[in-house]
Amino acid sequence: MTILGIETSCDETAAAIIEGRDDHVTLKANVLATSLALHAKTGGIIPEQAAREQVKFILPVIKETLEKANISLADIDAIAVTYGPGLIGSLLIGVETAKTLAFVLNKPIIPVNHMVGHIYANFITDFSLPTSHFSPPKFPLIALVVSGGHTDLLLMKKHGGFQLLGGTRDDAAGEAFDKIGRMLGFSYPAGPDIERLAKEGNPKRFRFPRPLLHENNYEFSFSGLKTAVLREITKLSSWSDSSADGESRSQFSTNSNIILDSQTKKDIARATQDAIIEILVKKTLRAAKEYQVQSILLSGGVAANQTLRDTFTKALIIHNPELRTNFFAPAKNLCTDNAAMIASAAYFNNNPLPWKEITADPELYF
Ligand code: KG4
Ligand code: ZN
Image 1 (tube, rainbow, N blue to C red):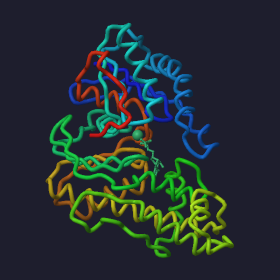
Image 2: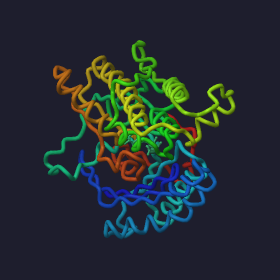
Image 3: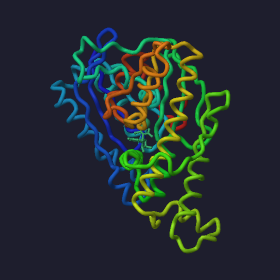
C-alpha cells in the first residue's frame, strides 16, 4: 500500500511517501521545508507567518516528494494528513490540500493525530539495518512522546489502542530544554544546543530538582526545573541589579543578555539534561515494569537526544535485563516533525473518512 503523508501542524511543511507491506513500512521519499529561520529572527513562532509559509511551500513540497519517490499521484493508494493538534492556520493548509487531492483523485483520506504520528515513526524500517533484521515493536508497549508541546506516557496493547498513563502538568520536556536554552542565549529549538554543551559540562557542579520523580503516578512537571535554573543563573550572573523586581526578572529570563562564562553554561546544560533524562527514564521504566511490556518506544523531537537514547538502552540492558523489554527510538530525522510518521500511523490504523467529515482540530489529544 502506497501512502502520501502530509504534515503541516506547526512551522514545518512536510510530505512523504511510504510503502506498507504486512508489518513493515519503508520510506520512499521524505521532504521537509521549514520556516524556522524566519521565526528565529523574531524569537518565536508567529502563527500567521507560519501559516503563510505553509501556503508557499505545500505544493512544491508535495511535487518534490512525488519526484523523489518516482511516482505520480495516480499511483497513491491513500492520503494521510495531520488534523491536530497544532496551530490552526498551519493545520488548515495541510488538511485542505489533502481533502482537495482526495476529492480530485477520488482516493481515501486518513486523518492522523500528530502525537500518534510521532509514536509510529518507530514502525518505519531503519535503513541502517538490513530489512530482514528490523523487527517492529511488539505489544504491549509503553510509548513516551516527548516534544516541544507534549510529554505523554501511554500504554498500547494493540495498534490504535492508547491508554494515557500520564502527561505533564505544566511545561513539556522539550519546552524545558527550549526555555532553559533561551536563558543561556540560544534560540528555538534549543534542545540540540543544550545537548552539545552538556557533553563538556561538569555533572557535579549543579543539581536541579526532579519534580514528581518519586510520586506514585505517571505525571510530569518541568516548570520548577526552569525556575530553579533561573534562580541559579540570577545568583551567578554578573547582572548588576540583583534585586531585580518580577517584571525585569522575567525580561531577563527571555533575554540572551546574560553574562555567564562558557564553562558555567556547559555545567548548567549538563545539570538540566541530567534532570530531564532521569525523570523521563525512571518514570518510563516504572511503567514498563508495572505493565510488563515487551517494548518501550521513545518519540518526539526530544527523542533525538543521544544521551537520552543511550540512558534508556543502558537502563534496560545493564540495570534491568530481567525485563526483556526492547527499546526503540526512530531515526533522528524522524524524531522531529515529518510526514513519514503520519503516513506510517495511517498504514497501521487505516481508518479513512469521507473528506467532508475531516476538519482541523488544534486541541486534539489522545
Ligand atoms: O516533535 P517536535 O519536532 O515538535 C513538536 O511537535 O513540538 O519537537 C521539537 C522539540 C523542541 O523542544 C526541541 O528543543 C526538542 O524537540 N529537541 C531536542 C533535541 N532535538 C530537538 N531536545 C533535546 N535534545 C535534542 N537533541
Ligand atoms: Zn511534533
